[in-house]
Amino acid sequence: MRTPHVVVVMGVAGTGKTTIGPLLAERLGVPYAEGDDFHPPANIAKMSAGTPLEDADRWPWLDAIGRWAHSRAGLGGVVSSSALKRSYRDRLRAEAPGAVFVHLTGDRALIESRMSHRQGHFMPAKLLDSQFATLQPLGPDELGVEVDVSGGPEEIADRALEALRALPSPEASAP
Image (cartoon, rainbow, N blue to C red):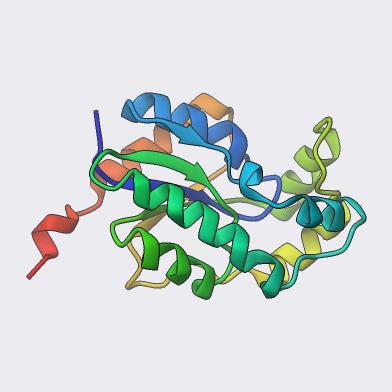
């Protein structure tokens, strides 16, 4: 299955965006871009020190992701981004109006456990509370799906693909 849309795999840290994103891109036959790679060094240093990012830190990062998504318009792609707030998703959609969101969700204890076992990532588990406090789930007017992160990566990617296939075609609702 190919998609001309850009899929943004979103959610709090530790939900598996970096694991599920490439699996989903492979199933869709489109390229994957790792959202963390768009962060400027100052953002990574801040998060590594255990300091949550502020909106002013996030705008250039979101703009860079948005530019990538825009470059994939009509071609398709998958990119990861926490996209925790509606305003962040709005900013991404301003660059890539056809973006579809896959919100990875799960039990806080499961997510924290996964975070504590991952190696070499700059985001410490102690920032998870700030991530959940910031999170604004997808609104009913936002094109996207929620996918539970319990189970293995292949199972989660399959659920995400199934949920995306069940969405109405954006073209069908266009005027």
